Length: 425
Ligand code: CAO
Image 1 (cartoon, rainbow, N blue to C red):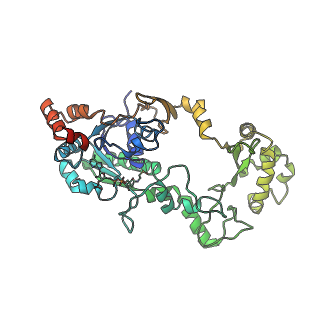
Image 2: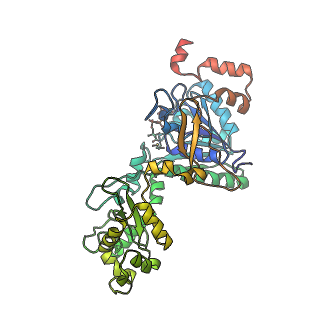
Image 3: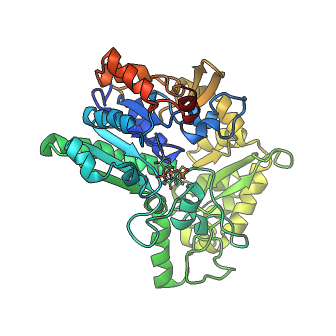
């Protein structure tokens, strides 16, 4: 079966997490992704957080499936010949270098357009234009500058970052959408364009509801669904909301049977208004159905703390899965707190390809997260990440159509090999 992005070729100049997330998604949708890496070194994540000596880390392998790898020194004159050729042969160039690094290599937007006016040049940067545009940025910096950290955690604790990589993977996802849109627009205009996804903007987009709350707070001075109401106080900025729901249906994380020893024996419980009567029956409080202090959502808001304590007395008698089974029978929205171990072992996620087992020639079998976006006519087959420079010869010959003597000339120039080997040559 064909793939949605069949025929799209990507020059992948990305590294670490944000950019590689984007190009991995595009590869899963069918694009031919050619990752350019520094000779001998490669993407820094190949060597970071290694669990097996001298073998590409899971950090790298899990972000670079379905790609080809070519090693080229982009600052070497002969390396530039290769990159120039790839710019001409590709539809999209994706990069997430520190601000200015691509220009220093000589690949300004003007130069790229000169080489290929149809080129879509897509970048992740930490910040958009403004006071911080020259800053290098990693995940947690973006979470802090994008509003996530100030709104995550508990009222009496410090700001918190979340384990979900909303700054890196979240921005990669935004960039992928921008690229696909630019490819679509190119069908009409015939021109490429620049696509920018700034990590601060991406995080803020995912924190949209908190900017909503900022304006509600400014107008009314209080937010009834926040845990600070009615006993605590509100300042002039959106406070940390603990485990409150971000929407109009109050929710909280409650202990389940076994919580004393299992850090994940918890369930997220939502007191959705349409099923309030059923909630009262399940937890053994049928009198709350008609009690004016509990019957209507507005009456419940100042009592949420006590309501959740009462629900918790019930959830603590059940495991999270027992509670889930019972509550689902009544259409009461809830969700177990699943550990990564439980997720890794969950058969239904394997069945859908959301968790996949991949075989790697050096590390053997490992688990990865597959494509979370399922297209019925473009199924994803996850294939292993490339070894460093595994496809250099193949790309020179098949994509750039270089003959044997040209390949030999490039190899002899040192543009494709690490400096140490250059010295030995
Ligand atoms: N050949 C020769 N040189 C190469 C090369 C190649 N194939 N690939 C990269 N380089 C060079 C770059 O040209 C750059 O050189 P100069 O700074 O001398 O011009 C150098 O490698 C390092 O690039 P960098 O500055 O991007 O890398 P860094 O490790 O110092 O910074 C990061 C990493 C992520 C902080 C920075 O790239 C960044 O801010 N990127 C944008 C935001 C982003 O994506 N952050 C998320 C990262 S994931 O957590």
